Amino acid sequence: QVQLRESGGGMVQAGGSLSLSCVASGTINVINTMAWYRQVPGKQRELVATTTGRGSRNYSDSVKGRFAISMDNAEKTVFLQMNSLKPEDTAVYYCNANVYTYTLGSQYYWGQGTQVTVSA
Image 1 (cartoon, rainbow, N blue to C red):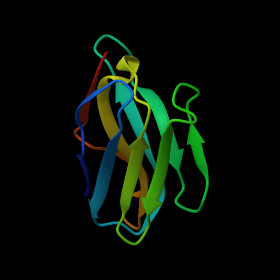
Image 2: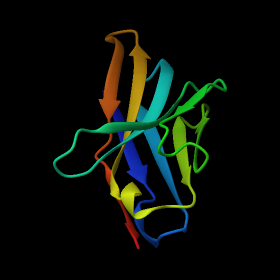
Image 3: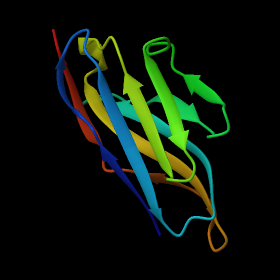
Image 4: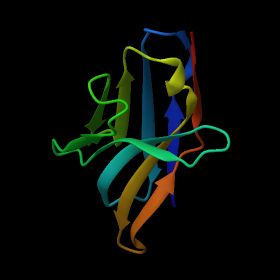
């Protein structure tokens, strides 16, 4: 079983910065991708950023130029540096990982989520 544990959420004023991290643990043979999603009540969960850990990074248009995703393969950790935060960035942020194990093949896993609140 694979577990993802996020940390780093909180409250910040508009224009400020926050950093999120997510550690993967458990039986892991290969991490294919790690990503951050976010969700506000009443809306679908949306992709924020994704990385393969080998230099490939993709961002949603709404955060491009403000957020940066990075990954430490050895520590099985993904980070999200969020700068120039806006009130519309307020959401629960979820860590997601596509992990390959010999027993289950490639599976997607989710963290429990961490709240980010940006005040005007």
